Length: 362
Image (cartoon, rainbow, N blue to C red; front, side, top):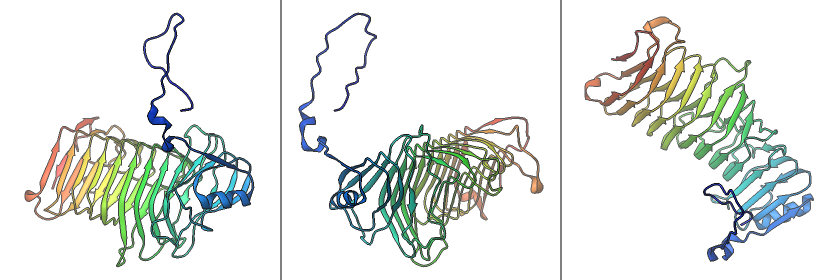
């Protein structure tokens, strides 16, 4: 317990305070030994043992493929590390947490290559850091498995997280991105898409609490969040703020798992704010605030057996620009064939602006 915070009324005169440490904190789980390393040899030996390892001097590379820690590893990056090489041959390796200190440069993550695997990795940072991570990209690099990958409080710049089209078939599951900041993006903050090959497993994705903005030279087809062909678990996009996406704010399409998009603030998006097309399981879109140039919220091409809920959203239509086929709409819901048997709830949504195309169900 390295510090004590005292909460309560403002102290306006001297007082004596008695601080009692709960005996529970004397247990071994709360006593963490930190091993400080400053050479490649020391680092390699410490990584193999696991535990908490602090990098105290600049190192060119840390190779996490060279050995598997015998217990969970926390790697504290307190000095610049040029590269961290990722990859494992184990189905369930010990978890590795990489913590990059404030104002320390992020390492370049070197991917394991053709048919390689990334498993049980967490990357943490400080969103107020002057140093940024320029993306985490497995796209077109042959990585077959990405399983249990988390980014927390990481400041990204330029590129986001792209886990698409890396191998056939591909396995991408258990991905969480939370409380990160993405600035000056030229591509989506998060992309994952399958190829629909036999044996492909994609899903269990959580994107929550992130702040996203785009560069003026971003690709014209860049979505804020972009997911296709997910088939396991569920997907949740919640409580994010996405500003200035050149294409759609959130696009989730052709997924055969439950989809939830809730509590997001999506501003100044050049096409649809939220686009949820051709998803075949439960679709929930609630409590979002959307400002888009085209449709605010579009839920389209879902089967008659689906449960679709679109409630409590606010759609700002003051910037909408008319285009072909009668759009844009504030909320556009179009099912496949007979929508009369759909478990559909659309209620409590609010429109800002005077555009007459507010809601259509067809």
